[in-house]
Image (cartoon, rainbow, N blue to C red; front, side):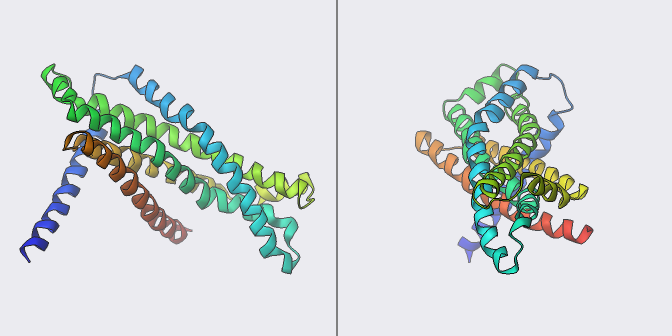
Length: 255
């Protein structure tokens, strides 16, 4: 019983410290100094650096979804309307989630390893000794960059996925181009686009803050760096999937 109690206390303490870090990082957005150059640097690292892998992810996701969707629609003679399935599935669910998981694997783990390396080499303590707020300089700048770039990357992923579906629809299923694109946009409602942009903001927040928390709480030297990197990727992926479920339920309730 004592071991279970200690473990529960550890979980509660982790949640408390994570919430505290999130609050300080968000408050840092509205405080000076503003590290504009660092923020643009991280935007480039997150956005441009993740572009290639997200283009591949979106392209092949759209192509596979079109192939599978055509098989399911064929008994009903509705194969020409596969673009409705592609656009709604990608914009509402697959695009934001897949983009977030790819970014978590690349960016979230990278943030964790960078901060973990700084933590074990006492660079963060050196920043404090110089009078610099490490959370403001290292966490808030990354948070701003992630919140700005993840929605942009998600929109690109959505567009590439729909285009990938078009390639299969046009050259494999022989669906007319005008018909494909007309029904692809016809199926989307304005709220689908809104919900499709709210999710990436939440996912971006999770990716950045989980990575920063794991990195700043690293112990155990170089072994701890690898452990923090893995922990950040796994934890952020789980939280992305959990939050996606609850947000989807909320959006369905709101109609």
